[in-house]
Figure 1 (cartoon, one colour):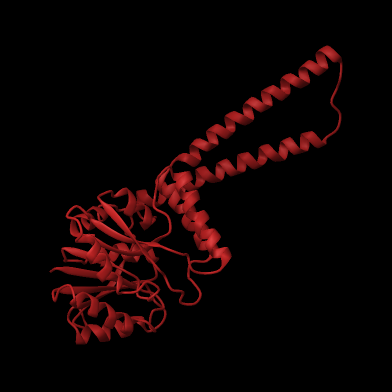
Figure 2: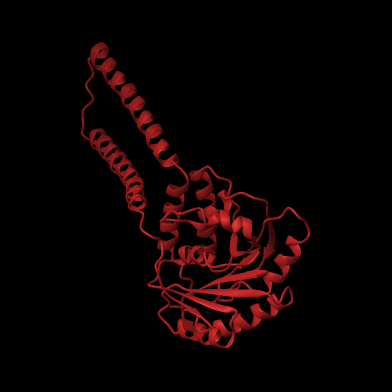
Length: 311
């Protein structure tokens, strides 16, 4: 098998057939030996039936139906376990990223023998001004808090060698940020500029972006825990200095600081630090709790080969 194409389905019914035609056209220009792995991530529409219909007419299409919606990143990782090609192209079905990128990535990869991954880097972020700002802040905060130097404004489409894919499959964490795994896996990676179209309302809301940021930071860095220690040390030094200041005023100048404002402010400040610190530790403990149970990060309900369930 020369080339494997991995894609996911979630509310993708309107795009599947056009995606199929365009990706087949691109893949056929590279090799006749290719397969398309379609992972249904619990899509609530008719995405599954449409893709199974394609599998009935084209044996190169294989459909993996997950038991429920596990999330985009986990579905992508699940699809990698079904590839058999020497090269793997990963892309979403929603056509926000053009299937024709496969040809561009293929040309870039063949420019050098030592390139293991070719991925897209957005020329311009789509969406409103607020979405662009929050998107930029996400990558900057992630790099700052994780201590990593991950590329910013990356797209989900990428062409990978089998060796690189096998290294990705070694990661078995349940709470994953796939962009971070792409980076820490290493290998020689090259980027090319790409444009991404907007297809209506994005499923990545502000709440989901914040959750992803928290998940990504706690998955790749212990810096928040170290920041608690630094903050605690700073507050301790400040409190000792303030205590010394009050002691000197009381002992040498017989002055007593009156009023409750400073006391209340200090109390609220310390309470906020304590609660926030406990919260950060709790997030890490919850991740440990999830990981040690060793539950699978996805559950496959059915597999369809030639449009029929694989017994």
